[in-house]
Image (cartoon, rainbow, N blue to C red; front, side, top):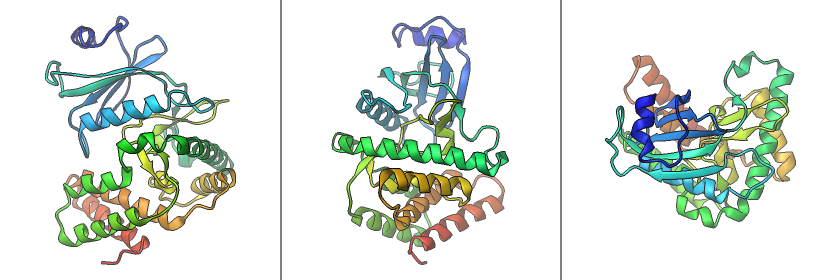
Amino acid sequence: MNDLHDSLASEIPDLPAGPWPLLGEGVWGTVHDLGDGTVLKLVRQNGGLGTGASKHFREASALRLLGNMTGLRLPQLVDAGRFENAYGFSGPPLAGWLRLEKLAGRPADEGGLYALKTQERERLGEEIGAALADFHDRGRALAGDAGKLGNPNLRSIDEAMARISAPEQRARLERLKEMIAAEEGERVLLHGDLNFSNILVARGERPGFIDFAEAGTGLPEEDFRHFENPGPLRDAIFRTYAAISGRAIDMQRVRMAIAVNAACTLAIGSNAGHPREGMRRVSFLDEALRAAGIEA
C-alpha cells in the first residue's frame, strides 16, 4: 500500500499517509479508506462495458451537479482528476481518481437480503422506494444540465451490442432502442445503475446511493432496471415510490429497462463460465425482450 501511496502522491494533492484499507473492488477499480472521512476511488481504464474515461467523467459530472442537494445521502465530491499516464502505476492502467466523502453503512446486499424476515424486507423496500422517489423529484431540476451525460439505457444497449453478434438478438435490441427513444414524458437525472450493491444502509439513516458512473437522464422507470425479481422487497419499493411520487409506475417502461439489463448481463458474461450459464443469460435476454413486447 505504501508503494501505491508513493506512486499516487505526485498525482493527487493532499493525500494522507497510508496505509489505506481497501473498502471495495469491482471490475472498474478500487475504493480505499483514507482515514479522514473520505475515500479514494481509482477508476481503471478498462473493465466491463464502455470505458473507464467515460465512467470517470460521468460520475464526477453527476456528483458536481448533486453537490448542493441536501436531505439525501449522497457522497460529496471532494476532488477528482484524470491520469495523464495510465500506465504509471503497478497493476491495471488507471483512467482517473475521485476523492469522496465516506458515507456510513454497508451495501444493502451484504448479509443476504433474502435471509431477512418478510417484514424487514418490506421495511427496507419502503425506505429505498422513498429515497429514490425523493432523488428523482429533485433530479427533475437537474435533467437539463445532466443532458450531456446521455441516456443510460440507450448507452447500455450500444455498449452491449459491441459484444453481441447474433443477428436476431441485435435486431431485437435495435427495436428496444427505438421503443425507449420513442417514450414521451418528463426526464429526470438518473442514477443509472441502482443495484443493491450501490445502496448503502445504516441504522437510523435513510438509504444512501453511491457509484454514479452510469448517471444520465431519462424516464424515472429506467432506474428500476435491476429490480427484475418480484417479491416483498420489490413490491415495497414500487408501492412506496408510487405513493410518495404521486405517479403510477409504468410497468411497460420497467420491463424495457429490465431487458436492457439482460442485454448487459449477456454481453458482460459473454462465453465465460459453464455453458449452462451462457444459456441462462441468453434465456434471460429472450424472456425479458418478450416481456417488453419484442418477439423473436
